[in-house]
Image (tube, rainbow, N blue to C red; front, side, top):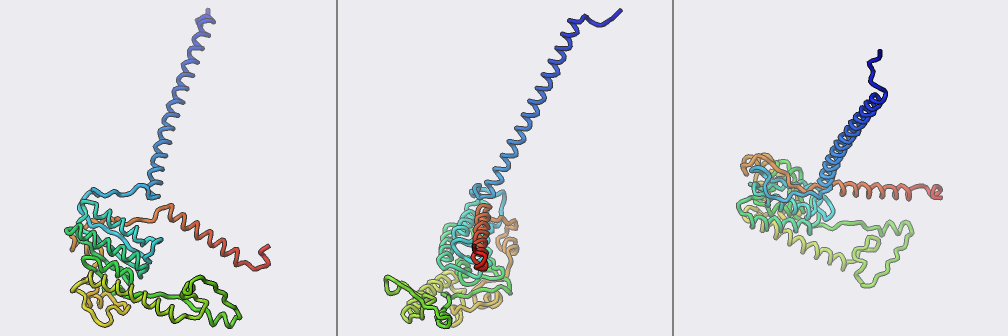
Length: 320
């Protein structure tokens, strides 16, 4: 005799079991989908935060960095409006450093051959302004390999200048350089056709003979800018500067000789100044870094330029 339930009950039991299994499977799928959405959302959130930080859209606003420290701002390379050592970037870094309430002193570490006198002047003026606003927070310059011309213009605004004995420092002068191609054009039989409205509009044109009037005007401009440079150094260095006939001649000296002449103050590295002078060994970097977008734009620009250069430099027979 069979012990199985009647056919109707068995079908009902199977249907209920299948419904429970289907419901459990759907619930498991929903949970898995919800967890997947959560993880994807968290990943996207992390990705956006990282991207915004890399693009420079998330900036340091000053305030509290977490402890007493020496603030560092780097000035590297040629000083110009479009580069990493532009006045905008250096000034922003210095201002952020002073906004931090835990900054015990600021070090501007310089490794630069110079550059724009205008950009250098902006940084010089801002250093003087920040020092007057924050008299208890010193600003020191630490020179690495080179601090010349516009780099020294900036450095002379600091409380003190620290160098290595083999650093190169000085070059207190101004130059304007270029080339003249007149003789080369004559040899090649090339005729220069220059049309201007204004008798001096072709000022220092490299393909025309040097005009004595233009040369005199250029020398006068250079002399004026040189005097501005000299005044900035004298104001910044004061009685520490031991002037000689060569001081403002454009010569460059070793760090050792620079200390003797009062162009620099002492020997010392960033770590030495932070540890033994400022007495805050922890170093926090406030330098404004070139962001991903800027690097990408430069690389794209360089790549595009190279494509055009390669295209135009092909043999004529290939330009078809």
